[in-house]
Length: 409
Ligand SMILES: [Mg+2]
Image (cartoon, rainbow, N blue to C red):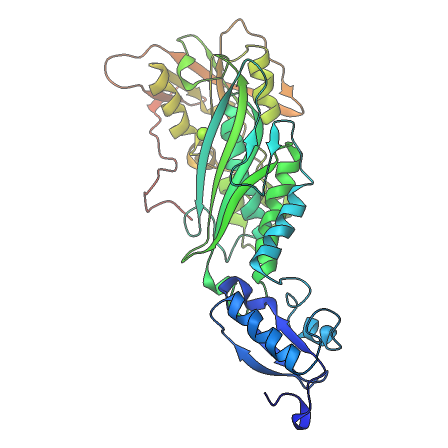
């Protein structure tokens, strides 16, 4: 191989790790500033390394580590050489980061064929899954990767909260589209790492270790999560426990996510306007509070919108409900429609017997009474919206429904 200036053996070889997740590799040779590509798009890492080693041996030239052109290559491709050496290295880095988050229920995490989880005596597992897809639940061109990771985990943690369970472990399988891992796009490792930064930041807050997952190239970006929680046997909060006369409550404020989504691309949007949309906070502490005190008769989290989720709760409990529009705690700037139908607020919606005394807030999060459960008449459950002057009209479920195309992305 005639490589390097004037046919002399090269001073070093360098490999470009920017291609590695596509299983395409590039070998550059030559002096600093003068290196040229001698091969790329090799079909797999093993043939590539054999080729690189044969070159290296033939020229008695070091290939790894400590090349003179290492810094040049670093500039040439930020993710190259010392960072994204291989998919395994990337997974190793994710594993290192995930070690920041520990949890008592995780006996064996990433690295073996399965994770091993251990529940406390007398507990049962609460398990939920959630799929987040580009164009349906987030937009690659609108949402920062950290927010996509945070929101993916928040969806699952919010379900755990609604059961009054404590989180034990999380799993995430991530599909990454080719445009994020093309050689010309040096964001390959950084997009994935930023996703995990957001994911693990929220995981750390709720002491939920990342116990496993998968990473693959995919036609579209998607994150599929599994959350494992634990709850004392027979004590989980269910949707089916509401009885006529129970009062209806919500945590936090409503409509903030729909409002934030509308403000996402406004030039003058303040970060406080976007917070509820980009960084929703699952109400784990509040769910545990309600379950430990046996305060709630039924609970659900508001992922699809108050109108839809209250209907779900009523259907499961075999009851109807009245909601006072004037009592709804609106997120600052949000409209009533956002609060009723916007979805993705990830607040808890729960019912409690009228004799149960609830605090005005739990862990700093307001708890607001918004209505009452009523007896179901003939036919299906009905939710009635009562306005400030006493006017009544049916509250149709208009929140997020899977596969409905009219949902604003
Ligand atoms: Mg839910």
